[in-house]
Image (cartoon, rainbow, N blue to C red; front, side):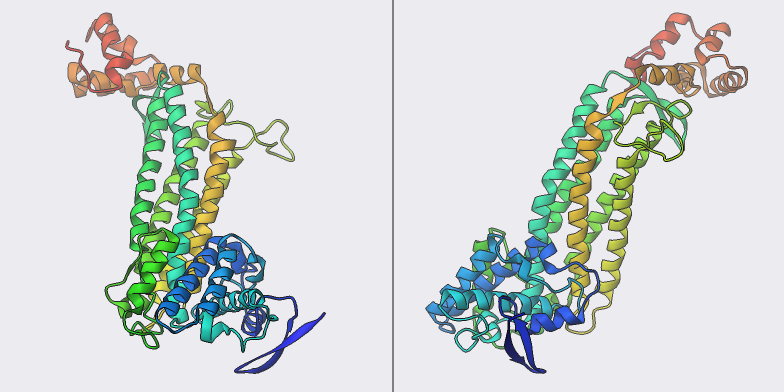
Length: 467
């Protein structure tokens, strides 16, 4: 393999001659092989890093810290990355020691080498444009990396929310389709009172819609960034006014309403915005898992379970039991949710582990949040297209459950009293008679009155029936 020699604090090392990364990236790749997931797995983070470097280059140019020629070359390289080129050059594992320094240097070296080629030089000829002195000018990993993370998470959220919104719309469509189907509601897995299957699916849609709004709110916290604070938030090695100008430029490039943090020292050490965002993803995961549990219960059977709905069959369910079809799509969503919940705990522990002016565990925080967004996006698309859209209802089963339920006695309580209702319910349970027949038999209400009170119009909303 052809190589070029590069030098750093620890000495010389041979780097593949065609590589756009350099010696510090190569050392990090050799040191960290934790997840097997390189930075390139998260294109939103690379895009965000490139935007940070472009904003810094233009600010340094305006402040006479960088020549126009160098700034133009750096911005050119950043545009290539923003457009999705050269992402395979980001080879460092996303979990790494050093608070993200390896990720920052991977970006600095790739950008420097693309810029060098733009200027007509060879890769690694850093005397003409340097990864640290030029690409990283007026920056530290400690402000560039978390700022890029704030942006990258917002970009990933932008990609995820449409999938969640589409799932919500699919549930709303099912709610309309099933609006006429009366079924039994259940509390604590026991018969409760009637509802419609449409109401059940509409509740699923509403609860997911709430979290679309919560994700948007969480993104607002990620718009306050510490760029310009450099090492610990004091702004060392930056000219006066740099922080305000560089964040303004980054806001323009990213089209996100970014603002400098009110206290850059606090913002450099605090992980609160990431913890909050991760918590919203956990909340959503819990809702998606609960809904998947309900889908599995409602479709259980086909002969000996609830059997009120049918999930579309996706694959044979057993290697030994012929004809068995399992609810594999909701099961996969459950497992996705458990991983997201576990990732939130990892974020929590990492945020707590920060010491003094910096949190060295930022790489794990960023990895877990981005990975959760990626998993949730794929899982929501799977659940919608391979499950929700194909669900059908067993109307006769739903009707039979209502007819045979003791829970419908609740609708008669205001008219026959709680004591009578309890006695009728107990008799129905032990004799197999229906509630309706027993009430009429004991002349507690007329058949006409019972029919009115047990009609869907009466039982499914606040009653307008007067007896």
